[in-house]
Amino acid sequence: MGMLKRLSITNLAIIENIDVSFKEGFTVLTGETGAGKSLVIDSLSLLLGARASSELIRAGQDNATIQGQFELHSPQLDAILLGLNVPSANGQISIERVIGRTRSSIKVNGTAITLNDLNKIAKYLADIHNQFDFEKILNPDNYLEIIDGFSYELTASYKKEYAALLLDYKAKKADYETLMAKKAKLDEDRDFYEYQYKELKAADLKEGEEESIASEISLLNNYDKIYSISEEANQIIHEDFIDRLYELNKLLAKLADYQPQYKESHDKLDDAYYEITDIFDSLKKNLGNIDYDPEHLNELQQRDSDLTALKRKYKKEIPELITYRDELASQLGENSDFEGTIKAKKAEMDQAFERCYQKGIELKTLREKIAKSIEKELERNMADLLLKAKFQIVFNTPDPKTGDVILKENGLDEVDFLIETNVGEGLKSLSKIISGGEASRIMLAFKAVFIKANKISTVIFDEIDTGISGETAQAVARKIHEISLSSQVIAITHMPQVASLSDHHILISKEVKANRTYAHMKELTLDEKVKQVAYLISGGNITEKQLEYAKEMVLSKRD
Image (cartoon, rainbow, N blue to C red; front, side):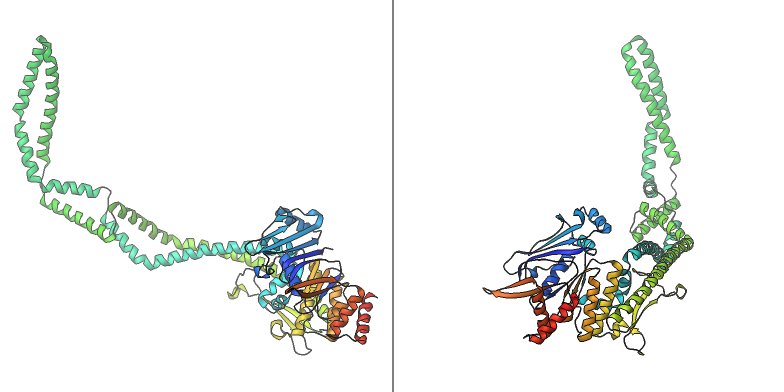
């Protein structure tokens, strides 16, 4: 069995320096209100992953330090430590938390870790019961978590598979909804897009058309000038001129036979002859091709005006309009394929839903099995605590045929805890009828079942006996003692019945010296324990009769 072996607290509020050892079995902590009992619980909570506040630091100090030494041999814990690169130290777990006014730190076996990592480790070391647990069993939102907690290792794999399937369903649902939104938007704007597409398609836009039109318009607008210049040039370079140039070239060729220096002149004139001939042919062709057509010019000017109007309307250049037209064609074409795509996506989503739903049903079946065990064990423990109650866990799982199923993060079900604490009153929701004294006992019954199911090594009770007295307090004391037979129990109590059944008794007290308050912790001897139990009975001055009764209570436990 694992256990908390030592607790050291330095500079935490009224605690300057306390170092206390814990043993196996049942340890109680008693003391006056304000003596520092809650600080011990706070310290243990910090070691087990609670968030820290610099307000806890003792006045005049820069930081507070809490150290705890645990012993636990657990393959699961060893695996977690290995994953965090923390040495396991043969089952010895040393936790140190330093709370600073500006910076804080957490170390396990000398290795720095995060608060999240500490919580992964802490759940194997101890369980703290406090007022928050009362609130937890009164809130139906926590009930699935409570059920799972009774068989964590068993439900964890199912929950992991369910979570993966839920993630897959959500992804496919998002794909389907995105597609539907896209189709809805396209349907909404379809008439407008179709109008634009038809207009752009009718425009028969072509790359480079603007430049070609501009060039042709310029040519036709300047027809007279072009024709006149071409005609004048043609007259200068006429056929007689070409013929004479040819004859001159022949003469130079003959002259070069006698005077070689004319060979170069002949070659140059020969090249010039052919170039001028080409120019002459081009001019004649140009004169023949230029055909001034006013109607064609009007058509070109109208086309240019239409293109300019389109550019102004869409605020895009012609190449951009061509791209946009093609995009519209694609988008409008997609819409015709949407029904098939949507049908396929919906089928994928429905299949993912069904897979997740079936895994949720498996998880529900497992939880129902666990719930039956909880019901039986809880009623037995409540009977031990003088609470003859009936308890039932009710699952409400909507039928998918009704369309009401919601795949939630923790499963399909809504769960309620029903209880009958008075015969004949019938089962009613636990969250609505529970009283203070009943809450303490029901919570203790829950804890007893939970601790047994999960083999919790160390259990810490913070005033579990609130609101009870007499025979009920004695029953609570016996139940806590029963738990201590298989787990280490540390309990803060005001009840003499609880204190008398403890194996070890630590008194927490405080004193004022030099205007400073100091808390102390001391393990009591048997005689000191008897006196403290008598004090708890009397609440003040102790009589001989109370002392004798306290001695009888303490010694009866030892028999």
